[in-house]
Length: 90
Image (cartoon, rainbow, N blue to C red):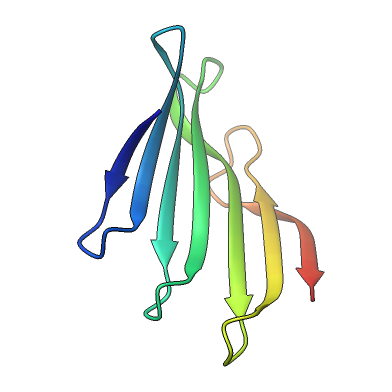
């Protein structure tokens, strides 16, 4: 696994390899207070002919930094927008 960090030294991207071959990428964005806001997973889908997003997670927090909602999304074949799978409220 190869890690890339942003200017705040938070992980902004990971690249995963299996037996030396690229497998998938994860990107991460953060709220101004440093908490994870969103993660997106990308894979090389042969049917699509390119590396595309396949999964997205979004997080919301209360004023104390506690997770209040996690939304899980899935990208379907040849779709530009993510479709929500589950919305978890805490």
